[in-house]
Image (tube, rainbow, N blue to C red; front, side, top):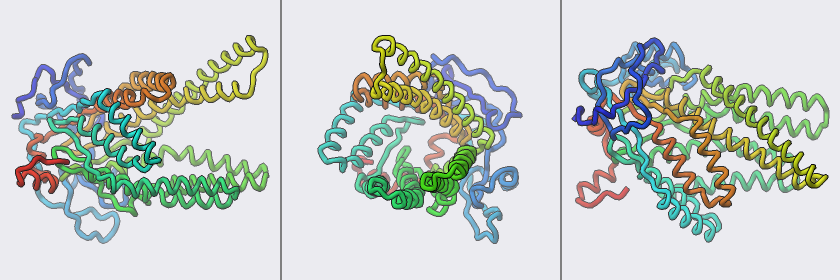
Length: 469
């Protein structure tokens, strides 16, 4: 079955992003050519693994030491059986058992396909919006689950659709927790006490990693492919270790701002400005640490993913985003200045409301251009550096096309007063999804054989009734 794909539509990808020393690959066909749902590729030279063994040391222990340990152990990305380690840096013991690879170095391509319909999703969105308004927001968890199920069930990879199984009732505690944090911080600040507001903000920052842990673990545990569940296997303490630096830095910046406001001393504002600069300067390191942690704890059945992006790559991404934000800000301010000049020529004066409206429009224009630019670059960086010896991911999301699409959506949303939202969601989802491809050295049926299905799916099949997930 490995040769059942349509070879004329095969697209060969460059795999040398993981190892620059590899030889050049054949050029990809033109974008207009169609791709099969999955296809066999000719033998290619598979680069050195981006990570063979999952280190059970703290996630911050990475680099040459972990890579050397991975190459020395020669595991293929299958989760090892961990033995008690005498120290944090001791490498875990591994168990045998490897997934058979495709013969003769064949690599299989699994392009992601999104088959959602704008009109279907618009009807779903309208119903969700109506019930959310009638229930004063309490229907929001059910609306979110229905939307996620539609998007997942219309996403196909390797001949199987994704699915989303989370019961809305289990999502309700997280929703109430987030709403409670928001109302608590807002109420404390609205009460007029700056100290109470700062204490509430600090408490919210302290609880935020727990909120992130619940969201990630529950969400991944309820996403499936071919009735096989995904997983996020980090613990609460691991999430706190991954997030404490940016949260503590943010809390310090907020407290320094409050102190500078109360003392009204130039030295306080200088200290606050220095703290903000240091926190922003460290942001690439915070982002790199988080995605290193998150990707290394994503599990696809017997496989775990690893992430090999460098700190320099993340810093370069932030630099490009900063430059793009500066350019779009200059352009928006120039357009705003011309609009102000036109109003002054026609009316001879400029009211405060007109000034505020023009400034708001310029700010929204900058956000509409910068947010998709950052989103596209982040998707390409995260997934192009994720994988293991068996699976690799490739994201070829066009930054220019995605920015143009989102800017068009922002304009149409403004013209239609938000009614264009369902069409915008489907179009953006289609572009982002269909830019992703999974490259595998394992046949899909072999992977499923080593990845037990969800118990509910097995029970449904044994009972002779259709499986409802």
